[in-house]
Length: 348
Image (cartoon, rainbow, N blue to C red; front, side, top):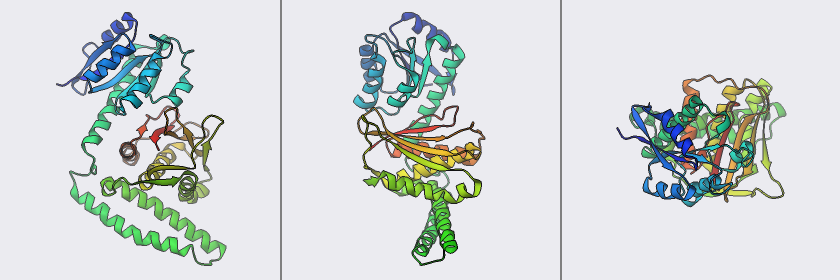
């Protein structure tokens, strides 16, 4: 079987030995794990060219310089434009690279402290990373609908979509009439429910719409998404809000260039996932500049309380669609953490 290639970058020979010991004889999905060792950032750069099929990289932060590992992350993501490889940072000097700052500013998939790192924790992180890499590669090989093997489902999705369009037009038209406040509120709620249902139907056949970048007003799009969930939030007593995170260094553009349809689908679907696990707690969407030039970080989180992780066919399907939408938008969807937070780093 073709092995999973894992690049280990560390200037301590002992770390390579321990890593080899942890993964000796281990297989993931009946495929062995091949460790490729580099003692420096420069050596790692050469190995990444020689082995373009590396699935995951375990990177030390402090090597030739105090930030060599972080520079290597930027080289992989920006210099090589490799969004697929999973990156796990390991550091024995967390003071040089604080976890919260690194997670936000660098496109990595996990952060491990060597002082607290056990064999089981390392093994778990690598397996999660390999699983994510597998899903990304599988989605890239099958850019058409996930229902290729069941064409009847594609036909059904298209029929449902065609039936939804007149309903959306009618509910939108109703809002233009001079109605009394109660009737107007009903029509607004009806249109919001139609949009939400239309999004769910559209996800069944993602391949029908080609990628068409255009200028999008961020605030307008987020306001539109908030209104879609307003009927449910009023009914159940929780709040969905958003924040455009500007500061003196990073100022968000008023408009971004992306595919409006796919981006709206991603926003709606991410909120749908959050609702399923939030147990009625308030939800928040935060948009901020990433350290990478021309990238945004979209964060979906609940304001308080702990998430309730209940795996259902619908939640699993939504998460798979989120991954596909991210790939279509050339974005990187990060694994959900223990707080249920979803993060997506996307270009604009």
